[in-house]
Length: 178
Image (cartoon, rainbow, N blue to C red; front, top):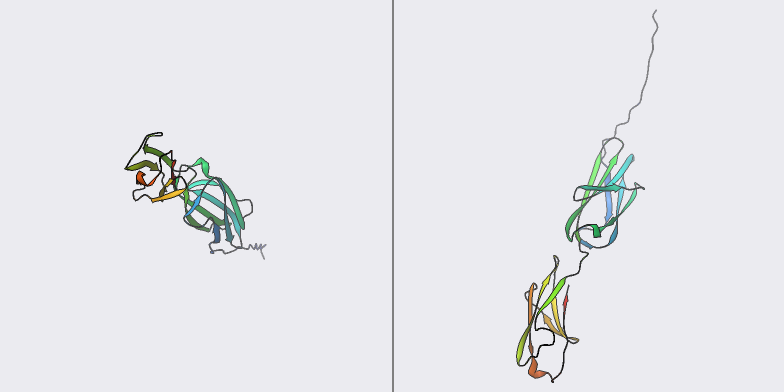
């Protein structure tokens, strides 16, 4: 009779991909300043939750199941980005969620083209401005606190003013861009 040795080992089968069930910010949110990106990752063997912006790694969350990562959006130009959340387990399975974001840290830039400050006007005249912003939605003109309405062309905005309806004097024109 010869000597016999038996060795046993155990292994674990894990084919389940981690699920990222909820996250913030939600899709197509306008963000500015420092934001907290959060994700709820679910997996019995969760190993890591990482955050990415346009495919570039930002870092890993400390608490894996309720993951949070702060992002300083002022480090990025205004524009569209994709926040990626990657949850992986110890078996190497990976779940991914992507969230489109809109970074908008800078206000619109307004340049009043005419009339020049202090210019004398009579009759019906036009006031105009150039306005630029990646997410420009509207340009509204005001005579004092009275709205003259929203410009139809947001980038080369103009509005007419009928001066015969006004008493002689100095009037402020202001332009609000959103």
